[in-house]
Image 1 (cartoon, helix red, strand yellow):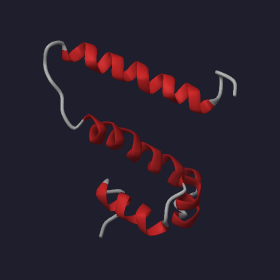
Image 2 (cartoon, rainbow, N blue to C red):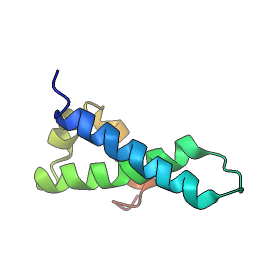
Image 3 (cartoon, helix red, strand yellow):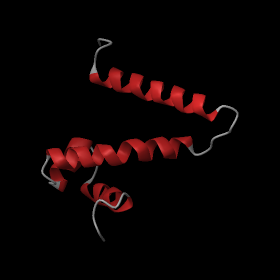
Image 4 (tube, rainbow, N blue to C red):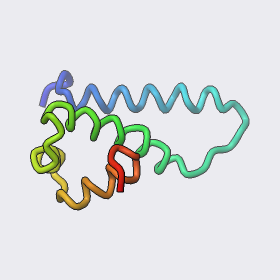
Length: 83
């Protein structure tokens, strides 16, 4: 696999962003980093794919590789739909 693959580029971007994040913390501690990163990535990912599929939840779930019910739960969590 080439270093120029989209997956590798995304990994590099995440690493660079985390480096900047930790630099700005200076001596402060952090917690719940995993949840923070997941939320920062998951919402725009879902929004992006929803827009690409013209809000077709079945297609969106298929592209994301998750169950449609899981997608709906995440959409509720991120207030992308109303309950």
